[in-house]
Length: 387
Ligand SMILES: Cc1cc2nc3c(=O)[nH]c(=O)nc-3n(C[C@H](O)[C@H](O)[C@H](O)COP(=O)(O)OP(=O)(O)OC[C@H]3O[C@@H](n4cnc5c(N)ncnc54)[C@H](O)[C@@H]3O)c2cc1C
Image 1 (cartoon, rainbow, N blue to C red):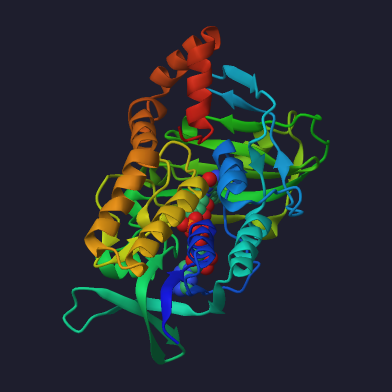
Image 2: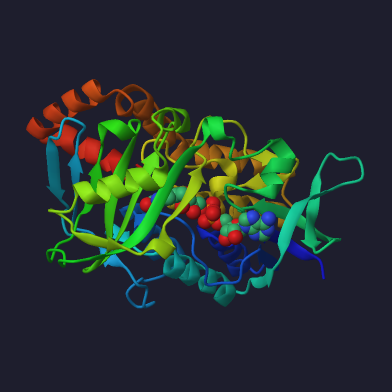
């Protein structure tokens, strides 16, 4: 069978793309090299944009869906100077939360299947090109030594930072020079959290430009990690990610005494956003990490993956309904540029000019402490919220 569309990768980007296509009656094959549910190395932090999209666009209520998650009531943040800020969130329908990706991605994956997408576990080796090489007309599956071709009308690449489709079309997504790196682990708290848990960010001097986090996944459990936005700097300092994480854990012993589950300690690259160039190459749509849609300040990429998945699917529907392919591609690029593109750009600038300069960051923190609108703008950006 030739499907209307093939979506490679069933993370948040691919699952939303597949659900959007299937809901409009298109036949869609959703492919992942892993069976679901599966883990994805992540901080698991979901800004309010995510619950808004779940509610308004996907019709998913995390509570009714039985999603394991912890609602978040504010942000607590420590600058390199040691100065701290705490902002309690106002009660809102679209709240921030922390949900382990094992559960969150499974919920979106099931949603796509419920809408009618078909799922197969396959390892995709490359795009399938038309005979003259000018267009992507499907995907090539690797099965042992065998290569199997699957033709389709539209390919959406949502296969993450190691995307084989993006690599074939425009080179490796995870080039170490342009890629951040992060490590995370789950830990049991020796003392349960207060009744209104907040996410905790610490901008340590030795991690600049980068930060450490503690995100509660349950009253007695946290996701703890470090995000480092310049791999060269931390390599020169001679400490590996695991050592840096253990140092942070020891430093937090009095505030957040915890026991790390060593089996969950994993690092993974983050393809941070860099430019506004087109994310449609030879007719294939790059979404989420495969398109480098990750906020350069916080490493947040879940909402950008979901929204680009949705926009790519809408353009695919346009093509499948007989629309012009070039116009559909332009609609996709325009959609993300006018939507998250602006905030991704702003956050990249903040990372370059403030996040990587501790004295400037400290000064802004001081001002933010005194002036509530600046405090709220700073916290909104640092929470990965897109406006
Ligand atoms: C340590 C860390 C902490 C982070 N913390 C946060 C956070 O707190 N909040 C946030 O918003 N973002 C965070 N991010 C970023 C976030 O994890 C990603 O941006 C997000 O997962 C992107 O979603 P995606 O759907 O594009 O790709 P993914 O979630 O990576 O999904 C890609 C899927 O493609 C599949 N795949 C890959 N290759 C192939 C292949 N060849 N064939 C078939 N299938 C394939 C994979 O198995 C996977 O299921 C963090 C990242 C890291 C590394």
